[in-house]
Length: 331
Image (tube, rainbow, N blue to C red; front, side, top):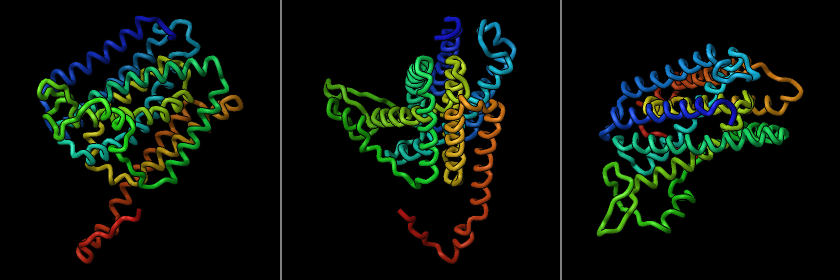
C-alpha cells in the first residue's frame, strides 16, 4: 500500500459516511427512485469526484510526498481513470436491467439491492486492485497479458450481439440454494426472514448474489484498463470508487432509455481496445494521458450521439400505423 496510512483510512471513512447518509437518511424507507432524485444524486457524485480531483491537483505533493507524479500529472491520471471506469460502468446498467426484469423486482426494492451490491463491489475491487498492483510491481510482463485481454474483450464486445443473461443459471445462485432454503416470494425489502424458527433467504438476496457475481466479471475487464493509465494504487482505487459510487444513481437515471443507446457498446469496445493497445506498447511508446482521456471521451460521446440519431430516425417508429404488430427479433 503506497502513501500514508491516514490517507487511505480517511478516504474510506469518507466513502462509508456518504453511503451511510445515502441509505440511512435519504433511503431509510424503500421507495421507487424518481428521475429527479436520480439526477440529483448523479450530480452529487460527479461533483464530489471533481472536487476530489481538484484536491489532488492542489495538494498531491503534500498527500503523497516523494511521488513520481507532479500535481498536474496525478490529477490528469485520476480524471482519465475516472472517465474510463465511468464509461465501462455503463455496461453494468444493461445487465442490471436484465436481472431486475428477469426476477420482476419491484422498483421500490431495487435501490436496496444496488446499494449493498455496490458496497460489496467496492470491497472486491479493492482486493483486485491490490493484487493487480502487486503483480505489476513484481512482474512487469503481466501488463502485456492485461493489454491482450482487453483487446480481446473489446473485439468480442463489438462482434457479439444480444448476449443473454440467465440469472437462474448463475453458479453462485445454484450453489447457494444447496445450503439455504429460499422463500417463494419477496418479503418486502428483506434479504432474510424466519419461518417456523428457520432462517430463509428471500429472492431479493439471490438477486444480490447475481449482481455481485456479475460485477466481479465486469471488474476483471475494468481493473486492468485503469492500470494502463497509472500504476499508482491510490489513484487507481479512488477513481474506481468514485465511478462505482455513482453507478446506482446512473442506473435509475438511464434505465428507461438504455434501449435507445444502440451503438454505445461499440464506443465501449473502442475504449477497451484502445486501452489494451496502450498497455501492449507501453515499453515502446507511451501514449500521453491527455490523449487517452480524449480518445475515451470521443469514443463514448460519438457512440451516444450516433445512437440518439439512429433512435430519432428509426423507421420502426414511422411505420407503426401500417404495421402495428412488431416483427420478432432475430436470435
